[in-house]
Image (tube, rainbow, N blue to C red):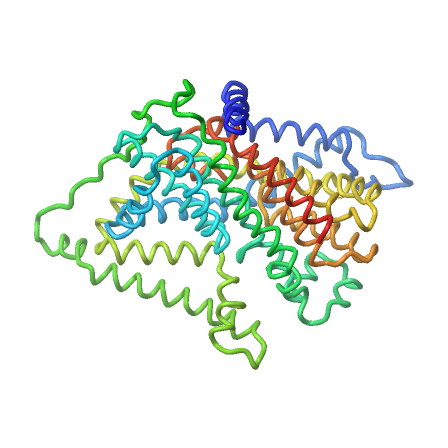
Length: 487
């Protein structure tokens, strides 16, 4: 039954869902109109005079085109491009190919493939969301190729959708931006008024109340079981006419063979010494970041292993993930020439990232400038009781994520409202932090923003996978809501 439902919903999305670039443009227009009609703008000079329409348009356009608007995600765009190309290049090395091939050759049906890809992607996503995104995409692609090579009928879009499910669990893992940002008083002061931040003490909100709380362990642990199970149950029967042909496996462009000349420049291009030297420097940088974070945040009596595991590794960000994948790729390729050739084949996948990320930066700026975020969150706070406030905040965060699909960006604009509501109503801060985090990750299954790297690697279109991830969103969303109410 669930497989038929998945096929039906997927068919609707394939017929109706536009390209992600079109969605970004339409969301920009919708945000502008909503802000224009509902926004709470600063009053003009003089006694309580509301801004005229021209003033509103001018304020929105100014926010949209500012450095904190269209160009707010410039650094982030480069980080995402790097995670795409470094992950792709790492997958082109022989050792990694062997590991991926060993996993990809195990499934003997679409259901087994979807469950395996989803489980591996989610486990990697709990370590780091960027790692989960790239691992899920690469494993989905290679699993689809393996099934086609072995002559096993397979539903490739469903397998690719399974590779995207890392974004369904990431905010409950070690790289969750909202929980990590609140572990220090400095981070708390960025989102809380001073009178509230001062009550937290020097430690902020510890991870024991968020990431490692019983509530999150139960909810995220349940998602880790539920998500692969749902993906397996969504697998259509092999006789279904909706299955794509096996020829729809997307191959990489061939990479140029290394030159055979042995001139001095060629020797420099192909020697493992130079690439290894750079790789070791990058690995040393990652290790230094982990150790520095561990020694600063860990209690004085903590063991080095505990300090690294609990306070060092959780601080790894996108920069460290990119450094790690770049270093491993350089070591395993063995030369700068081989690595550069592998990166060339991955660069074509960055087009969507470069085009769309600025638009979402502009959307976020217009929502903040017009007060739409506070307006929507205020409506939720007005109707919620202390018992239902986390659930209502979770639902509002899920809706807001469609417009601001950046976990850090959304926390920056919704976090202050959520935490202030929690403190005035006596709701535990850790629970409210996770409520925003769960809402942020939930509608990733409907918003194709984060799917861009996966789409580039696997070759599928957003409309081919969103129908399946939408089913996961509904079932997982019910589980999260239930957990917020009873835990």
